[in-house]
Length: 239
Image (tube, rainbow, N blue to C red; front, side, top):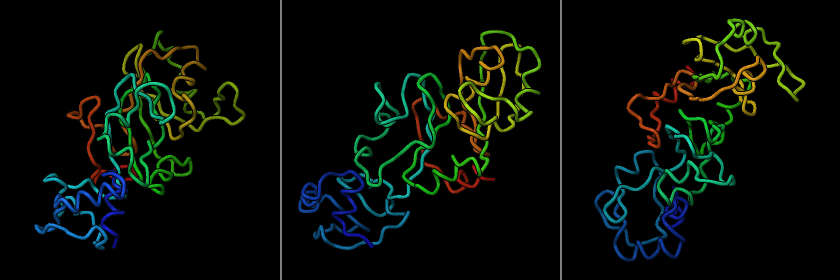
């Protein structure tokens, strides 16, 4: 159970005073009845958006909330980096949600593809933990033709990136052509895919992530678009 004013404030609908005004003006409806008391305690369940409206629009989903986004090129994954961020592609009030939303790992500004965003801390850490070995698959376009030795080098589990003291976990490479390959890794080191190809004398000119665990980027999810994860999506990640 949660107080109505605190719940709506945490969902980003405004300060407690602003939420009180919404209630006073009769704009909050639950199960067909207009709520009159901002201090009323209500059950917070996953089906709340089907039961409650704010100004005639379904209320935003309560926490925990996880979504997938097709991250476009040119946006960053941090609240602090300079430039347009992935959070600006979401409803404006979602930036005021408590707990706050965070990306599950990061894709750099010049990398596109599947990105998870959540306010569920345990889920986030389960996906990014090296111990979980959740695979992430990337499609890399390269500046120069591959030599044919990259797959064995990446699979050996001995490749050391510049400036690091621990070798990378084994990774799986599948050539898609002379200048393009799929690379599946289970870690998430800084600019890892780009640095791996640099270590074998090549340069990544384009990078796209199309899979996390068993969850693939839907073909109908356009760059910049997002949708909430379903229970089946959650299961696929760890399946």
